Image 1 (cartoon, rainbow, N blue to C red):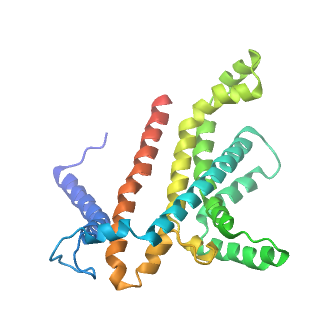
Image 2 (tube, rainbow, N blue to C red):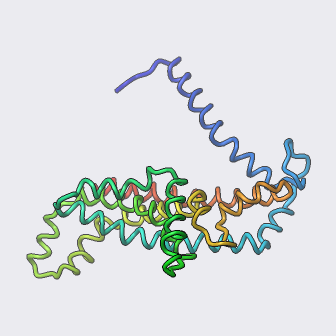
Image 3 (cartoon, rainbow, N blue to C red):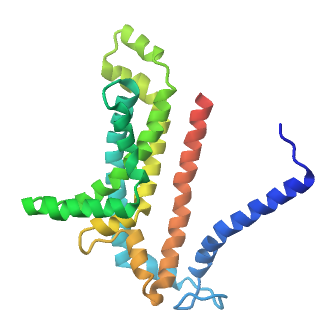
Length: 270
């Protein structure tokens, strides 16, 4: 095992402390400013108040944007869970021509800049589908988010499937179980944690997405990140943006905690 001198440990500790401060000081500043009584966010804070929290929780635009984010996130996650799992099974269990190309195409959307994906989908919706009478509307935003959410589910499920032993499934079939019974009672419980972790990460990624949403959201429809971005251009609304950002920070801890817990369960099981 590598042993570091006292000076080296101290130096590494200082570097880690500086990095953590650089990462989390802005978040702490957002949280503190959410309690700022001033109409325009400023520093240092002269007076603390819960006024903006009350206004934020009674704001109809914020409620509508939150509902849109949740609905789009759930829809995109549902699509990603189905398609991501099916693709993972196809690429892990079967050999066919172009397998590596399919693998690349599945993972590619997460590597593409969001602006490229947004422009491509916007052109498809407006220049290809609408002229022939297909108006995707709200559903188009869900599909747009699902394009990159699929990767989250695919990566988790595919990695888990590669570690599964086929012996248990073969024994199940030898004992007379149908393919559906084998999948439901044997296969799915073995990759269930990875399946749930992929879904949690997919929802978090969709909930946070703003670039693709700009290009695919129907007129008059805002998700929560899009609403926050639009409000930042209005200094008088910055305090409510800080409130919403604080709530998002707190709730962002849930998918991180869940994914880590599920990851530990997978590791313990292996």
